Image 1 (cartoon, protein in one colour):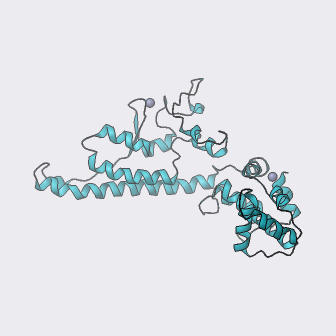
Image 2: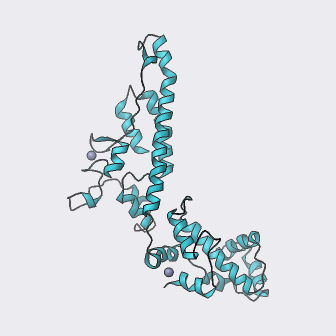
Image 3: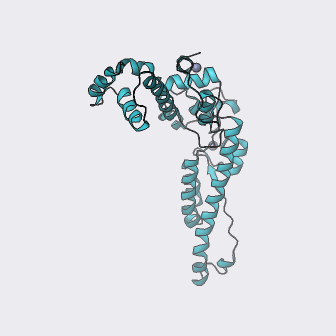
Amino acid sequence: MCKVDDLIEEYGLTAPGSDYDSIDDYLAQRWTGSDGRSPEGYKKLTDWFNKRVLKAIYEKHGRSTVSIHLDREYNVIINEDNIQRTELAADLEGDGMDIDELKKTLVSHGTIRSHFKNCLEVEKDTQASTKSSSNSREKAIASAKRMASSKTQDILPDLTETGVVPHADEAIIDVEIRLKCPECDTRVPIEDAIQRGYICKEHMADSQITDSPDNPTTDSSDNAESDGGTTPEHQDKSKLNCNTSSKSLFAICLLSQALAIIGEQAPNLIDTITYTA
Ligand SMILES: [Zn+2]
Ligand SMILES: [Zn+2]
């Protein structure tokens, strides 16, 4: 039991709509994306939860809970630097509420995070979310290849007509997206990397699948933007080297266009570019 559980109980918070069994069910499914919608992060879910709590408190004090007011006032309540805070504080006092007490009642991202981990015991990487993200990964890779293939198709007639490559326009275009280790010459088709769970066993594998006592991963990007280094999101990322978000796959899509055009002349460069995506 944590502060989140206490608030759910104290204000009798229930599931939003019939698609979810409870507030906790909603939070867990929205976080993992197991309800089929795209997963949300801690910040959004924390704001969502806090607004539910605020709405319940407002109702108790007979204050308007129209969402447009609630959204605006929520932002003023949690932001102590907001210039409208004094004004809102006076207004809330008129309804019997103290703005600082309200802020203290609401929860932080960290509290929501530990509620997921310790109370609900949900992991971002559930079966359902793995399955749905692997579907969207496959689609993104296929789409990247289609784009590369189509861009290549465009330049083949010119190659034929100018005699640079005779019969080029009759060729079958075979697109492969490979990921290359930044440390050595290991390169692997992206599908294979996903299946085996790493790009280069020596330089880019997680400590779980390497015998080396010190983590040989020289890539520090996992820690670079960490707010503590141990969030489940970051752990998930390092567990699967190729667990690319759809955003980065989109980048691969774009890069594969470049790949199609300059691939013939500079294959080494392409592998490097593709890896960066
Ligand atoms: Zn809890
Ligand atoms: Zn390597």
